[in-house]
Image (cartoon, rainbow, N blue to C red; front, side, top):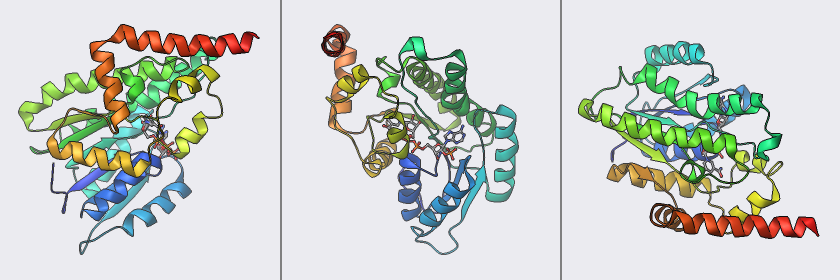
Length: 273
Ligand SMILES: NC(=O)c1ccc[n+]([C@@H]2O[C@H](COP(=O)([O-])OP(=O)(O)OC[C@H]3O[C@@H](n4cnc5c(N)ncnc54)[C@H](OP(=O)(O)O)[C@@H]3O)[C@@H](O)[C@H]2O)c1
């Protein structure tokens, strides 16, 4: 995907952080952009920002309230969007949230909610839209570095994001003959409202592990996504450190575990003193 001029793009979670930065960049490239999320006011503010990035005559923008964790609502809201705005050429499933905690402190209700938001959300939008999408269509599902490394403090989130990666890999092969491309975006830690929220509950061991990597800007992640889509890459990993981590995990998984175990143990020794 290189030319977004006049293309219809749907972005779930397009009202904040990485989704919003991507929506603005694609609007600057002439795409008709639709965003979906739960909070009305945040979405109204976002759609103003996105529209201000428009650059072609009659460029269209659209938003609707949607909780992607509710399968029936996804169908209803997307049916309306397809009728009013058109079938998307590009679908970006950017919804996601993490509430890092020790495993023992994660109630089943949080695990259930995380899987529904982070994994079922991508499933439900794809289930409705794939049969409608045309040749040349593009789907991006947003996973995370936690989608290929199980990170301390992210038991539920890693489970969901590994799921997103597996789902995307399987879907890729199925929709390729239909002329639809699938990518999975695995951002590293990125400076967004969602990340700020995570900071409130992150265990110190998790901070120690993540502390070795820099914080990206959402615009940097959006830029890497659009570049990766331009090349049709399946795994899009923004930033040098993220790419390095991926290669290390593939080639030397024992070394990655050893480094993380050392970081965890140093925090736990400090706590025990
Ligand atoms: N920031 C990071 O460090 C980081 C790192 C790796 C991966 N990621 C992934 O990147 C994606 C974007 O993260 P972000 O940090 O940009 O998040 P963010 O700033 O919190 O934005 C999340 C967006 O998703 C929407 N959303 C949340 N739950 C929803 C639901 N159930 N239904 C519909 N919309 C929902 C939010 O709007 P409402 O709350 O109004 O619904 C908002 O538009 C997520 O998939 C996240 O897991 C982020």
